[in-house]
Amino acid sequence: MELGSIFLILAVIIMVGMYLYAPFMARTRSLRAGETLQVSALKAERDRVINALQELDFDHNLGKIPAEDYPEQRASLLQKGADILRQLDELALVDSSAHDAESRIEKAAAAARADSSAQAESISDDDIESMIAARRKEHSGKSAGFCPKCGKPIWSADKFCPSCGKSLQ
Image (cartoon, rainbow, N blue to C red; front, side, top):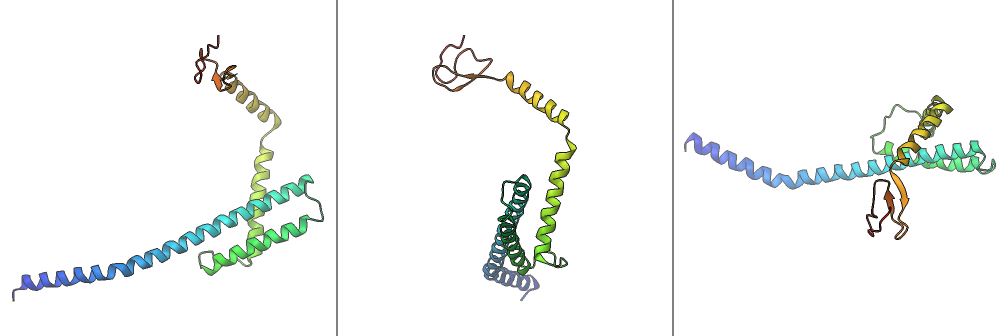
């Protein structure tokens, strides 16, 4: 046998082996994708819990939530967040250097609260008033209200209603 035919047979054997091994590789990829979806869902739920904690704290500060209900609602949200973080830890995708799941969610909520309050304090009343005036000026030139015949919105530049064709002049 020649050397070329040996290489050809070897190449065919390697190709057949790769073809037979392909389903095993696809299964591994699908398992990784399933884990990724689960991690994404857990992270989204974690973000929802953090937002709910922020809203709860904000509402409590405004006096919308009675003082007797606040601690148990907060504790239940913290417990839910801790459970989610434990599940993420089980998947070994969360940093293992953090101490306690409850303290991590508390730190995340506190950081988000600090960011929100810092943004709110940095804007003065005069800045807000000028932004409102600019927004009103921007919108005043665009909309002219609604068509008297069909009720659809019309623009100030329209001479006829774009929906029903009624003359607007």
